[in-house]
Image (cartoon, rainbow, N blue to C red; front, side, top):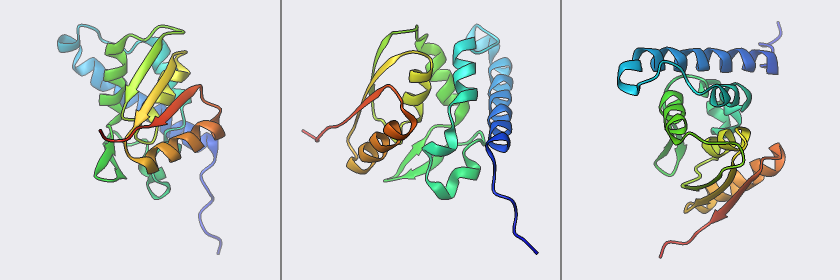
Length: 152
């Protein structure tokens, strides 16, 4: 008896699609409060493209596409996909726009903004997060500058 097949990119893409559909549903349900009933299309495309499972601790990769915040260590979390998407939608990021992000975490929001065509500078106080995000940026060839900064 063999074990379960490893998750392939086609499975993960299906999880991502499901995540984005759940986000779509939340946006629709909150449309009166939001004043719109759909995510900005470029943001929606970026959410479908960015491999969220690479931006959470490895043991949580399977949970990455659930609509829930996830612990990333140091008492920090990566936001629930709906909340993260909402924040980015409200920013109304244009192509080529420059963004300063304070608090990189593991870099998911920065990656989504970069996928939308933004130039992202991100600073992070937790050295381990900054190092992690820098490594990930290089591996995924993301156009993001991540700088660790010291507490004053």
